[in-house]
Length: 331
Image (tube, rainbow, N blue to C red; front, side, top):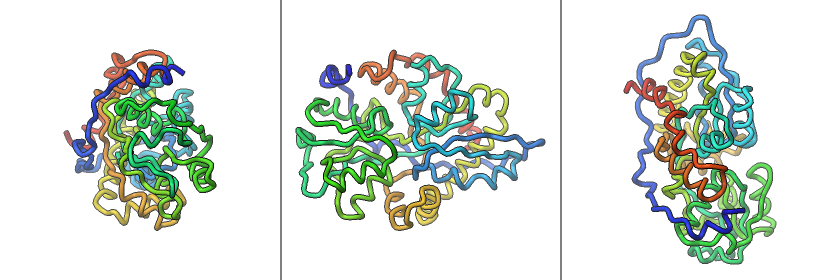
């Protein structure tokens, strides 16, 4: 991969997570119901920062929108279904707009981000991870091409850590497979996502390597995901999309104000035990931190790394529509 040859030579400035605006804003008054009702098909993944998605169906029904949810295991699968026209909207990774455009798929538009959190390498108990140099020679479980992998790779660049200084162990399937590999001693550390970051810590076989934080690179940023829609949905179902964004942000606001409610929704979405969900929810800040400028930096950074075929940073503005969020927030 070009990344193994180029990663040590690419430099990005670090943007601190604390400087990002993550708080959910107050939504505008409830919009009027649509007549006749409109069906909206939305793809989603069972990750905690999307907890509002399972709370909006009843609200949308009152607003004349019939919500059809389709579950996917990975962001990439949801992106594929969206590009194939099987969905109107999908929750995808923050890099997926750039990836889609680089692949020649121009029928997609980014709508909004969903949340942020600090990201730490998860170390196996007894394995030292005090600084980035401690990665050398270690076995690190990764999901190549995933949202967290992009964050991790960009942070390695900033810290001048050669990607081939450690052994990257590709883990297929869901996050539980990462935790099992760590628990069995097959890997020394994990680059994964919640709740599979908190589970090893709570069960006593892993820890947060707090000095190996990788969620604050300028190239990728702290955003955990985003919603993308097809152009057909924007043109043909705009009213339904407006109400979906409004309802989602309204529930996001509710959960932001109540950590207990967020933990409950997290558990309901993921099927995890309430104590695990409550712990995992503590480090997540609901509310988008992504922006077109951030996505442009992603697009350029990914092209420089050789992860995507070409630099599509010049195409981002034409494929981002912040008007749905603006309307929902009364801006």
